[in-house]
Length: 320
Ligand SMILES: [Zn+2]
Ligand SMILES: [Zn+2]
Image 1 (spheres, protein in one colour):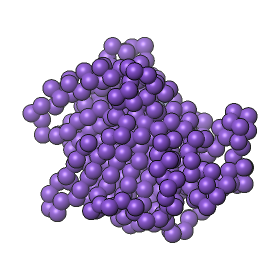
Image 2 (cartoon, rainbow, N blue to C red):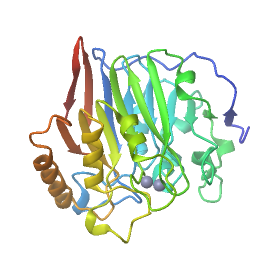
Image 3 (cartoon, protein in one colour):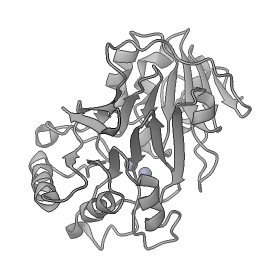
Image 4 (spheres, rainbow, N blue to C red):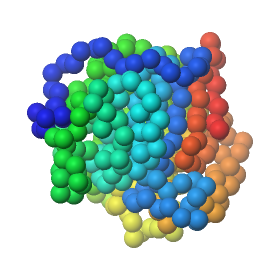
């Protein structure tokens, strides 16, 4: 146990999970983007359309389970929505860098007495990520300390798929090529699939944790590939080794893995809306006439992707 309100769970957890699916929908997996920016929040007129909040993606599974990927500043707005529900909250952390944990002190459900929150993290990696969400809530760097939080939080190092206790949900992890380490996730449910790979350098100059061909296999045939595309070739060689990928590398991964759709994510804080529009235009031209990916977008706050399984056919993907 780290704090009164924050337990470290190392044993197999019970499988009594979540609340109800509150949305009216028909067997869909829904991905909603609450923060798409890398490194540091970047609000302002130049980034208003794609958004300035840092990493946070919400996945609602058809089973009624839901998963939050990372707790950057985007999680604040998600917290306002979830505060109206009673469901158990599941957070999968990629790693503990600020832009992936910084929103958590402002996540409304942590102040709700009956709220159960499970944080899936890891003790692996150079710096260790265990409970990095709570370490910042220490009474000095933030006015509240984690011991004072009324919610019931657990840090879990077990496989998320085991904890969720639903045999139809598969969660796989892969280690990212990033300073300090961390994890990417592949989530599958009843024939629909999504991969979340943020803060990953596909071709790093330092020791490779996961090779390119292993990434291709990890992403093979996925419905939605979300990948860090922070840099352009013009950013190199200065930023080679900083732990992020170039747009051109991510395009190639989507092709090699035959991903049905590609979402470029973790935009550089200095990348304006106009510049991201230009990347989108270039992507559209590059992918034209190719079989996969059939859809490509640059992530934007409030963007929703709906995956609908089709019997005997490829998953229907709707982006809006
Ligand atoms: Zn990041
Ligand atoms: Zn990082």
